[in-house]
Structures are given as structure tokens and as C-alpha cells.
Length: 212
Image 1 (cartoon, one colour):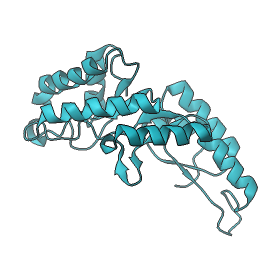
Image 2 (cartoon, rainbow, N blue to C red; image 1 turned 90 degrees about the vertical axis):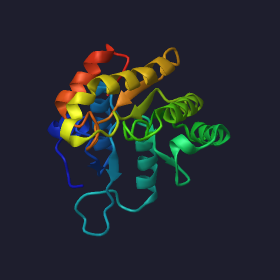
Image 3 (cartoon, rainbow, N blue to C red; image 1 turned 45 degrees about the horizontal axis):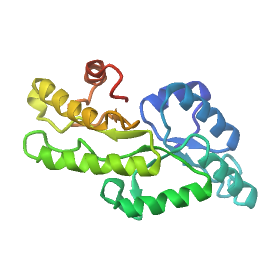
Image 4 (cartoon, one colour; image 1 turned 90 degrees about the horizontal axis):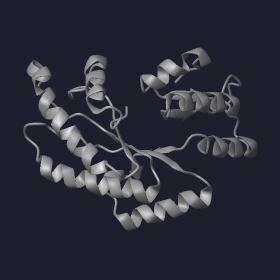
């Protein structure tokens, strides 16, 4: 959570590293890099707790600037009132949307747990219904993207699951077709797409229908 030089922003965003932001100008520069990459950055707001080095000092001006930062490049919603976003009701999503609209904020992506199931043991049909519900929530919230994963697979023969993974991700893409919402693959330890090579392999299969 220390200071990161602007020259390293692109690398950090691409690698999904949470970045520390200590002033509004830094946040604006980071936002411009996000727009260039078409990705959202996860940030930690640094506060000056008395050392006088970096971070926002605790005053009203800082509060105003932090609110301005929250509007720069959208939000990624993962939880609402302690409940994972994929589990809230459509009525709750409408409540959240109204609060966001009132605050002048928009949602860039839904940080869902879709695809974080065992490819052999868990019920894919049930999980597909969860994806449909999450897609409806994304539409209500005005999100352009849904984060998802490429299924937990056995480490000893992970590469052999390619066809099954592509088939299942393809099912998600087909469900999302025409919705204006893009499923976006995120890497994770233990899933099929846990290396840069397999992530690229997945993206190449979908010709733009699946983001990252």
C-alpha cells in the first residue's frame, strides 16, 4: 500500500494490484490510465494520520476530494450490506441504484463470484441460474461488465479441462448476448485461467465476447 510511480500504473492495474491513492491529482492520473486500458483499478485511500508524509489530511476539503475520486471511473460492486452482490434481490438492487444515482455515482462492473465453483463436483445448471440473476442485477445497476472466473480444476491435469471450460464460459456469453453487458474473465489461483498463457487462450476463443 505504499506509493506507486505513475510509470508503473499500467502494470499494476493489469496485474490487479490494489493501489494506494494519496491525493486527487494522483487519482485523476490513475483514472486516465484506467480509461486507456478499459479496466477499473482497485484503490486504497491513504490518510495522513499525523506523520505529515503522504495521504489525505482529516478535514472537510479531503472529504470533498475523496467523494470526487469516487466518481472518476465508476465503481466495482462486490458486496451490499455485507451480502455478496450475486445474492441480493432485484428490489435491493433498485434501492442501491437510487442511492447511487442520488450521489451521482455509476457502476462500472459487478464483482461476482460466478465461475468460482468446482468444475467436476458442483451443479453447473444451478450456477447458470445464479449468473442469470446476476445479469439482471447488473442491468438494474447500470453496470457494463460482470467479473467471472474459469472454474476450479484439478492441478495435476488442469490443461485437459480446456474444452469443458470454454463450453461453460460460452454458455455465459450466450446468456449475456444482447444485454449490453460483457462477461469479463479474472484470473485466480486454482482455476483454469490461473496463468497468463491460459488467460490469453480463453480470450482468443471468444473474439471479443469475453473481456478481461
